[in-house]
Image (cartoon, rainbow, N blue to C red):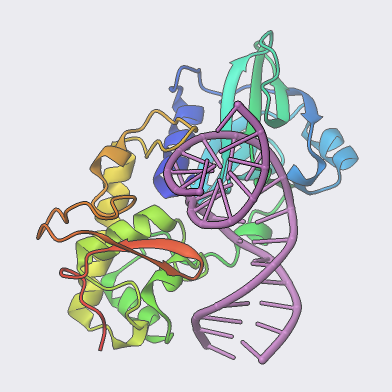
Length: 274
DNA sequence: ACGAGCGCCTGTCGGC
DNA sequence: TGCCGACAGGCGCTCG
């Protein structure tokens, strides 16, 4: 479910309070409970329990779609994958149906990792880079320039859509924001990356940043049965708008499958590559 | 180097 | 009503 803007929204809520809960900063882990074994990628459950007890949560960062909970000694890394979410509740509340891992914190709080589809993963590591080391540039970071982006596009000969979804190429984009960025840049999802001009690359660069910023400002998108509180879904240009009029030209939005992912675009505004 | 197919999981929705 | 397939915001793996 969550892409960069949704993960960022969750990060800010954990760090500063929000989404109906208080900040987890400064709280100490007093208890841990793993309810679905495969949720914990590293280390093993015994070591995880022994290591995390007593550590204080000092900060909450993000790298791509990974949440980084900085603890006194280690970092708790969380990837929400398709259906994951993090909830801060009073410890007296019952454990929720799809909670897979929860941490009891001092101050009567519980941080619960809820994940219906069980695709999410959690790591407790000393060195974050062992998990996030292969990620591409952070699209909203200062180091991400149009020139470097153009060079990176030309270093591959791949369709734009699967390339933008590749976290090693750029970190944080998922199916929604990729379709939105390509439509804003007026580039066809099947266009081959090394045929892009420098001005097209710059347009795509700014489109990616624009849709991600919009998503963050709207506190992410809420779709299906999972509700996040954001309302970016009301501002989609193409995603899940198959057959609806393009907001630019009025022609119906098309849906094709690219790399097993539903892909939405406008035939008129995003012409087929020759 | 690249794309296709599949596995991992649970839930919802539309068609019959 | 029930059943059944398609589909879902992700990603790692194998294979050709």
